[in-house]
Length: 101
Image 1 (cartoon, rainbow, N blue to C red):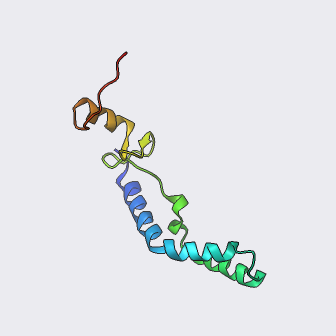
Image 2 (spheres, rainbow, N blue to C red):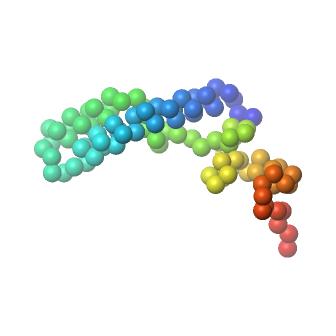
Image 3 (cartoon, rainbow, N blue to C red):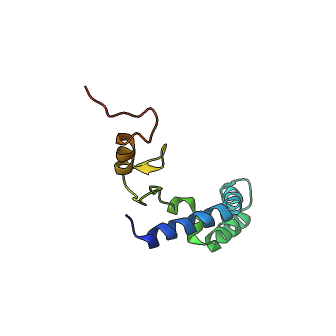
């Protein structure tokens, strides 16, 4: 099990990303628009840098829903490889069986 503080920190970042996503998207569009004057683009980039760092979607880390493990994460199931295997072997995931050849 991952440390609880890291799991809570990830949830807090997720809330910030959702809160500032539209504002961040519009400021990025202004900053990248080459048709605007340089001053306006610079002002937009300065406003973008004033936003909280944790509101950037790049800072999110995918974690297992059950254990909080950050590595070996399957996006489709939102589980780590270890939990996915345990659940598949116990028959909790429909249609998934252990492979054999």
